[in-house]
Length: 105
Image (tube, helix red, strand yellow):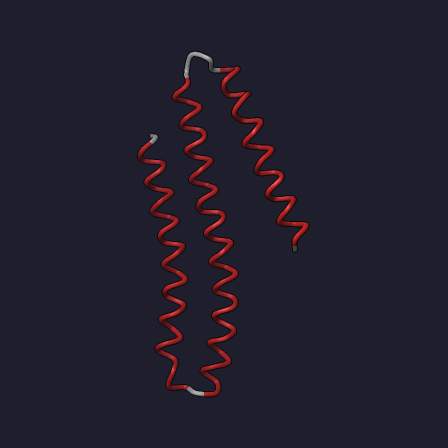
């Protein structure tokens, strides 16, 4: 798992560091295109990392919720509230990504 994360992070950094010189060399007269490209890259990174974190959190919370509800069914409402809070993080990331895209469009 750690090796996969390191590889994904290395690929992301390689993409970001090679995109900037290539874009500035090709479009020397259009610096706004570089800003748009990096804004889209930032929006994608925001969604990717938020989705990754939400997936891990949702897996842990759902496993704990199933175990807790099996023992005490009356705590279903409270445990469902924790899952809603985890989903709110993904919605916040989506809103941030939309704001980045709209701001630099």
